[in-house]
Image 1 (cartoon, rainbow, N blue to C red):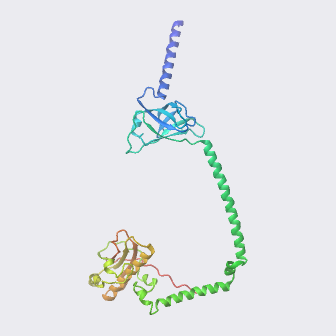
Image 2: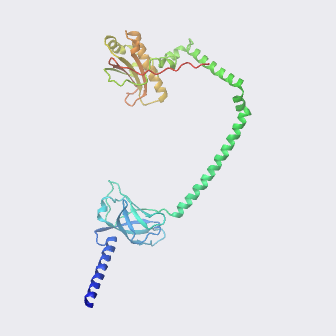
Length: 360
């Protein structure tokens, strides 16, 4: 093999290596791609260098072409980026550029977020918003502040625990009013007797001649009356027949269960008296106004009052007539509604258990 041939092979190989290097560098710097220019401004670029990657959705889609120092102190550092043209479908005017790093101390790169669908696409030379980079020093300072705050909170917890322990010890030893109340059985017995006496007085008041009208105006004498025939939920079978009434036409006042148009219920009573059925449920509900607990109690009372009228005025098997108070409902008209839901034979219901009287 002649010297001239070897020299020719060496020159060709060198040119091929040089061409490959140029192509590789150009590919990395997008020299042979169709690109457009994008800009972002930052108060601090945190060590970002020219030639750094620009990523969109975590994918390398551009290169930092130049970083320009501001001309005045009140201006920001301008970062010029060459971006692949296809990225214009996801980068919009409201996209945000942030400077990030590979790990804690890795190379810096620019990450551009996706824009919103309604925002216009960026044009060549547009400037998007730049978000300040997170500095490691700032992170360490924040961590130090959090640790100091945590230490103070732990000290406060320890102090509070110590105080509670001291208070508990004094109570257990019978010191102070609370300690005497807890440790003195006579005081406890007196308080318990007073509570029971108060309950008995209230029960007597409910049946007092002068106050009886106050409770009857609301359709019941005690909360226990509301649970006698109430079910916990509606049956899962389809309704065979339904009668609906607006509460403001059926009852005397918006906040009571006193009937004013009893005869409006006669069509329901006639149907129940003349037809076979499994169970009939009087379901009452209110609109979305008012207190939830008060409205739930009101619907229970209204359902009970309607049931009592039907049972007293028509020949019905009263064990098949149930009630349920649904409370607030967004489907109820203004003032609420009462519905009589009639289910076919064979329908069963889940009765609400009544709590047994407490032993003394």
